[in-house]
Length: 335
Image 1 (tube, rainbow, N blue to C red):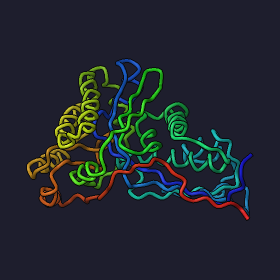
Image 2: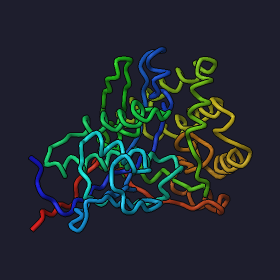
Image 3: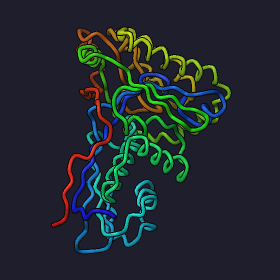
Image 4: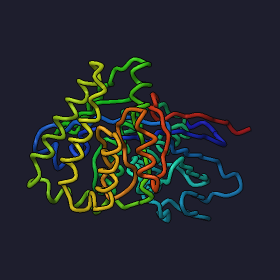
């Protein structure tokens, strides 16, 4: 039986992907062998607030738009909110508010899946149910990929649920293996200090890019296989303390990824990338599906000022690795 809560808040991390991104899509791992991705949660978050509506049985939702006076779940416009409430059989008389640390759409940091995982975490708590990261990730995948048929992979749901720096493996039977990257506190801090995250100012819809990638997958299979292998190589290097080679891994992965679709990069993005390399970056990549969002570079800290100077039209977003996945950070029972 559900507890009677008046307010619940969850905090769910966004993520950066190092290598292997794209091999987490079913079109790849169901036909060509398991996919593999190395990603990390970061200390940029999606916050989801649930509040009991004491004065009405209607639903109110606030995200980039506001849905007021919604009388039934079927009337909800936001697709993942609608399907989450259906999946967990949540009754009307609730308010849902989402707040993000960064632009919440089209940045390549996995915000849509992070939001969904955080919402599911909050809704389970609303029902008085314990829930672990595996179940949260599975339910998020079910909603986005099975119910809504949205294109894309599975890494975002799992890294936002688990947190940390992880090697994630995706199998043809839909199982997912999570293997943490083991770094000392000093190694993790040093690695973090070598990374530079810059916002291009562009927000894009990844749907079209994902659809084109899936359409071209058979013709680009060698690229996907090499990116998957790079994920394993990255995992081994990090675990063996050879994180200084991460720049090479990012550079190689970017060279393979940019060939998957004409929509992943363009002349401007390529120009930014080459300027960063000439300024001292050992490697980097565009985070997410492509077309915009954030550029991630690996460079010795002494070169960071020079890189930011030659890319002065881009905004730096400072970050740290996040150990934890989605968490409930506040709960208040009704009086």
